[in-house]
Structure formats: structure tokens, C-alpha cells
Length: 189
Image 1 (spheres, rainbow, N blue to C red):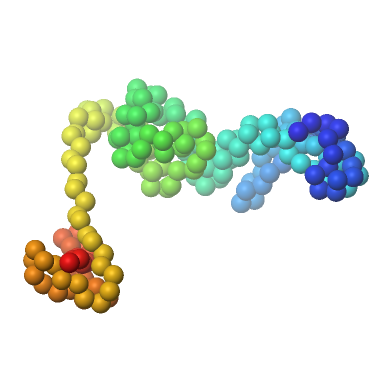
Image 2: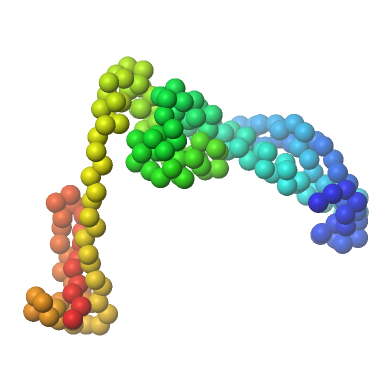
């Protein structure tokens, strides 16, 4: 998009590039972004935000929301990770999440949940007060948890040839697991 282009809304006017100070509000807290580029139609006065302004303001606005909500900003998350001398992959592993997800928090693309925010703060606290505890967490082996195999049957009754029993596939029995989870096994024959 550039100045002089036709207005995409009215199709009559021309777009004129303007650099402004734009103020945004989140939960009553305001933030002003300077040098915000827009294109204004000289006929209908509609304003279109320049793509470069959208891209550059995204992180600033996300961090503003984080501050208002009492969460760590993207730069604070990165600062804690660097203070702990961890690569993104290592830090994501400590938090029990994918590197891609953690990178999005650190780069400001996605806002972390309150529970993830608390985990990051806890790791920071451990490092400051009990550095050996952080090493203990780092050295723990990951146990691979096998997912149970559950086959869902279509139809009212199905028979399992290897176990020779019938299960009501419409209303199968519900079993309560050791940790309170509910599951059902449906055999297909």
C-alpha cells in the first residue's frame, strides 16, 4: 500500500500517507504509539493502518496487555531465560511445553496463561534463592507416558474376538482412573 492508491472502501478517493501518534486503551489503561503510519482517504476520510505499523505495534500492544493483567512482558520472559543461562529449547523443556509455544511467548506473538507466568516466576525465584534446585530439575529424566489405546465403536453392540465380550457402544461403562480421570473402553470386533 502506498500514498496515491485508490481507496479500497469508497473506490473514489486517493489514499494519503500520514504519520500520527495513536493511542490505544486496554481495561482503561492507555498507551500511545508514536510514528504510527496510516493511509487516509481524501474523499471518505476512512483510515487504513499500514502493514508495517501493524507489525511493529503488535508486540508493544501485547506487552501493554500483559502489564495491565499483571503478567510478565515478552522482554521480561527473555530476560529471565537469559539470566538462567538457558536456550529457548532448554527453558521450554523446563516448563513442559514445545519450543514453538515458548518462542511465541518470548517474541510477543501470544500471551502466556497465568499458570505459565507463575511457572516462569517460580523458575526465576528458584534460580535466585536455590540454584541447586534448578539444576535438579534440569537433570530429571523425562518419562515417556504411553497413551492408552481406546477404540471407539459405531453401533449399539460390538464384540471383541480376542476378549470375547460385548460392550454397549452407545452407553459403555465409565471407569474412574487412579487420578480421577474418567475413561471408557470400547472394543471393536
